[in-house]
Image 1 (spheres, rainbow, N blue to C red):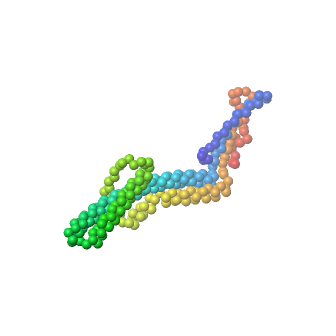
Image 2 (spheres, rainbow, N blue to C red; image 1 turned 135 degrees about the vertical axis):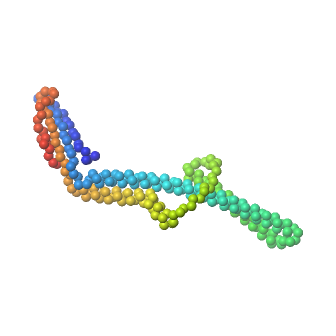
Image 3 (spheres, rainbow, N blue to C red; image 1 turned 30 degrees about the vertical axis):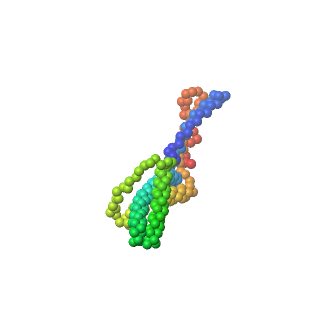
Length: 232
């Protein structure tokens, strides 16, 4: 942190001359025209953007699971309706066959009933394939390599009291992608502020204390070149 003082120390020895020196230096930044605050704002906004990007990825994963879940619910309901429809067409075909046998239905009507039943069978096969696909999509969204044989049930529907405009406003205010973009705008703004501040010098003070002598322990204090501090 550039706002904290910097401390340095050194020890020098000259055994041939039997001279020893110990020094302690201190540097303190006084003012940097906003460099530090701009850097802090950049770091904070980068953290916010990263969190929102994470939340966006998490929400997208949950959304894909929900889409797959309701797709499976829909496919299951469609299959049940198709099974019922095929049963009705089969009943019509059987009734038509009985009436045709006694001469009360024409061959055309019997043929039409059989064609309708075959079409219903084809539709039923498509519905079964759609259900298998929907279940596979849900397994994939859940990250399952194999189907563990789970069962699902449709949850109770929740009635929303808010109108569509209020819901849209709420969705926009909680949208992680928009929040991340807003944070990235703030990061860019802080970067501009830092670049402007970098055109100005830094104001700081520094000082040094030095002990020199020919014997240890050093007890005599000799002024260093910067003992009284000087601006840099």
